[in-house]
Length: 83
Length: 237
Image (cartoon, rainbow over all chains, first blue to last red):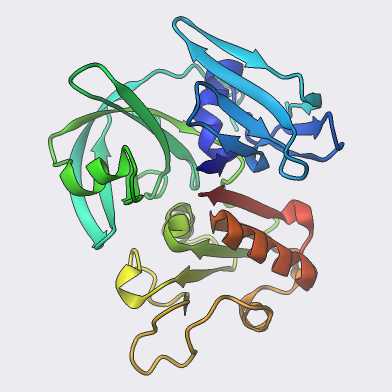
């Protein structure tokens, strides 16, 4: 079961303290650039995984732990946040 | 967006189910009393958290179904084998408590703004929920933006917000009402040519539904000449 980045807006706001669904990420694998809203999101496992809609590369993983959220952004080449 | 709203600290807000309304045999609208609700924009989401007696928690994201200025409401469709939706559709009653985090999201959002770019809303199944919020907002604000909804649904008894959406373009994929002019089938290029604003008018499109539906429709809109950046999408399942 997967959704897209729109459904992860709450978690993203927890981490970044602002809306991130419109922020654009560049995939570190294929170079696809698009809003986080369009990432393919899997949330049933221990963490929430954002995958590239084009090549399925893992862009970002967010893990909610007691008292903190761990963020791994190793699959993103760039993250462009509108200000 | 107001600068003050840029940095957003989110907390779980206690909410009480104020009203439960069956939309179809599979979907129900829950109106929520949320003290301290800051208001929302059309198309935004809320996270709903349920806590079981043993402390087990489940969180799901739902689109807000109500227009800005109205009480927050969600419309939940039952997912077979779901953990949260069967409870919200079949069990929860007015007076029951849940927790809410939101509103969140800013991508699949529409606000009246000049210049008035015509808006095409395309919904599949319960993907119509955020589009209903947008449509209601548009009607209530008497905004001059041309706006049109194409709503794809399997059968007449599954139409959500039936009364409100009568004047919109309904497309039945399996069973049609008696005497319906169009045979059951998916939204195709021919239909889009009839109902979609032409690309020359710089339209915006909001497409929400199951992943395959959204892929099909956003591809069809691109073929029609819509610009990729003007097609907002929201996918589930």
